[in-house]
Image (cartoon, rainbow, N blue to C red; front, side):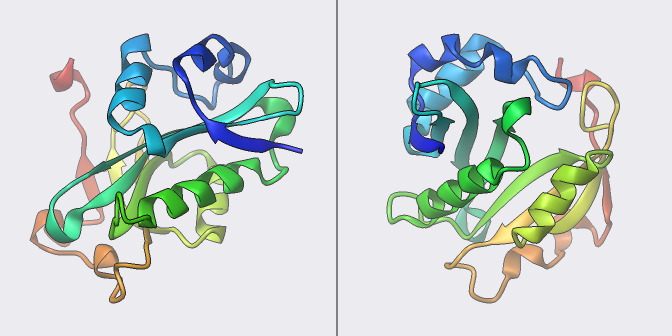
Length: 180
């Protein structure tokens, strides 16, 4: 059985096995620490009874007004524990934290590789919708789907409607090299 607990800086020493996987994005140490400092209620892990970290969530909140939302920056589950509902457990906890008074977000979003059919299906089964395709989002030039889940505060599902910011397009080009 997996237990949800807050993620701590010491846990960074326990996630190597989880991170050594082609489906998992890896980040610099500072990236993880920034999340722990700025959004501690949106960063947590799942662990086994013997304290083995088998998955984690890096979430943050951002935006203004109706665009105030939580974002899944990373959610990953160790290879040996996939397809057991742990990813759903992590996402469900982020929904709870995102709807709490402290955050009170309108929606949740994430980016997922268009080629990761298992993850796309999992998110769709959780109620996420594909908002648009982002061309060249990843450093490998892979495209991403920008997926969104309306939260309790977004009663009219405004987050799923296209507006001027999307120019009614389903695709957006991401210039990764420009950001380096």
